[in-house]
Amino acid sequence: MEQTTCLIAGGGPAGIMLGLMLARGGVEVTVLEKHADFLRDFRGDTVHPTTLDLLDELGLAEEFEKLPATHLDSVNLPIRGRNMQVATLKNLPGKYKYIAMVPQWDLLNLLAKAASEEPTFTLRMRTAATGLVQENGRVVGVTYRSDAGMGEIRADLVVACDGRDSTLRAVSGLQTIEWPVPIDAWWFRLPRHESDPAGGVGVLGDKRFVVMLDRGTYWQIATLIAKGTDAQARQGQVVDILKPIAELVPWLSDRVDALDNWDDIKLLHVRLDRLKKWHIPGFLCIGDAAHAMSPVGGVGINLAIQDAVATARILHKPLLEKSVTDADLAKVQRRRIVPTAVTQGMQRTLHERGLRPALEGKLNIAGRDELPLALRVVRKIPVLRSLPPFLVARGVLPEHAPKFARR
Image (cartoon, rainbow, N blue to C red; front, side, top):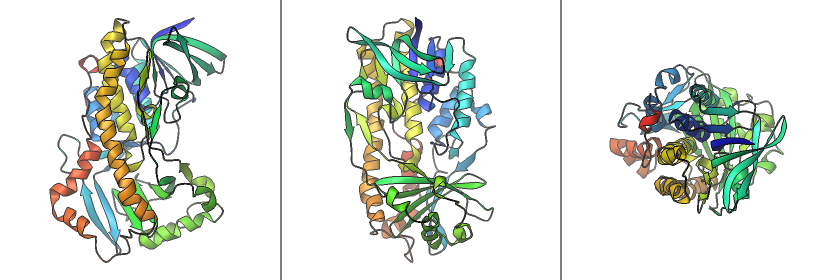
């Protein structure tokens, strides 16, 4: 029978980061990842300052700097053909005053390579956790499916890091709180020209909300749509979604035919939920498996990584001593519930006060001669331009790498 100390389901940012830190602390760790590689398009590519600080602490900053990246340090809104800055990250405290835009597969490959140098770390690709093994009211392992067939791995602790559609969460019996969300999102790419603005560009027009992220040679674009309207929209021509955007952002008018067909448009079903309780004996959920986030602010990947850091710090000693209790798992939830709840509260407010009115045509900034009063005040008072980016970029209760994981 296969055996490990900590079994992590899911090789995303939370899973690989948790595995890396625990392995550096001498804990035997096995990570199961169902795909053959980390290459998935339109995943969370935002690496926030708190994560950049963490990479510094882990001794990985130099290698990270070699990855292809762009830096996002401001947010602009186009008003009557002019780009007006409404937020800046340049006043953030600390070394990093920007959000790094890095393909997630590059970040995961970097973390996995560092973890593979630890003798107690094992990463098994093309291996999907399919269920929980329980004995006497405690989770003692998982069942899995791989190319070689079905199998079972026993573990002192199982941690679900397998995302918002977590298989293990679904079979655990843990209950979820879910809030209504007015949006879904389309993700696609458009070519970027050197004459285009740099940084992040927001477009808030008539029944249209678009976020454009500068990726150097292309724009990674999220277009928010009213929830449940994707299927109907796909009955029309794909060019129909670009023409209204080009009307609001004239410098995109030469790219309205850049998309070939609807296959170029990826749909993200937006959810906002949270487990009431993140754990049962022998089993813990973190990251999106514990709390699915809206794409607003691009904070999901960074909250997941922060969860992993707290989990490693709190459970390192109990795992080494093979004495993990349900009380230990509860400490992780208590530590991470505040930043999770605060972030989701902000997202819910933005959904109802900003995104819903925008998609209903009640908030057309791009069509106005000037910014609304609230945004004019924000532009004139530097501290107000820095406060929202601070909450997004640095968040609440940032975590730092425990001493045993630092290099």
